[in-house]
Length: 120
Image (cartoon, rainbow, N blue to C red; front, side, top):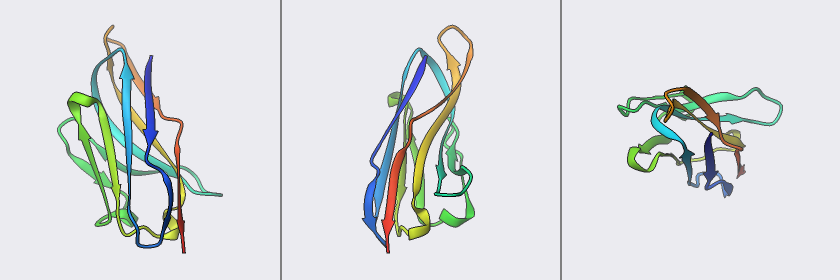
């Protein structure tokens, strides 16, 4: 089993910053892509940002220039630095990762989510 545990969510005012963290643990051999998704109230879950093992990144247009995804490979941890937050960033943020387990099988795992609320 591979577990993902997020932290760092909370309540912040418009224009503020938050840093989300997600640590992966379990029988991990390697992690390929790590990503952050979010689900806003009444909307479908969407990909916010992703990062490959080679640290190539991609972002949804609405967060470009404000959010930065990074990872610490030895710690199997991914971060999302969120600056200049807007009320429309309010959502539950989920971490996701895929890779190989120690037995050679593929895995794809999700975290339980962390709430981000941006007040106007």
